[in-house]
Image (cartoon, rainbow, N blue to C red; front, top):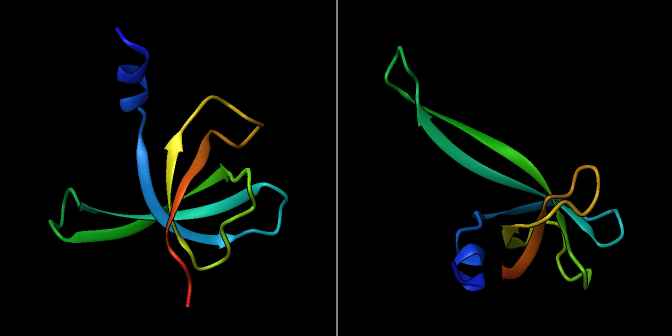
Length: 88
C-alpha cells in the first residue's frame, strides 16, 4: 500500500469556524442530517471538531475543509487543509 493511498483514505469534512480564540487551533462545526429511526423525519445536528491551524489563517465564520490526522493534543485530531470561503 502506497503512502498516498493511506492519506487519501483520511476523513475530510467541511464546516464553519465557530471559535478561533486559541493559538493555532480553531473549533469547527460540521452539520449533518440523518433520518429518525422511528418517525422517518430528517433530524439535523452538528458535530464540533478541534482542528490544528498552523498559520492561524482561519477566522470565525470562515468555511474550512478539515482532514483527519494523528493526535496533536488531547482534543485535536484534525487539521485545517484550506479555507474554502471567507466570512463576509
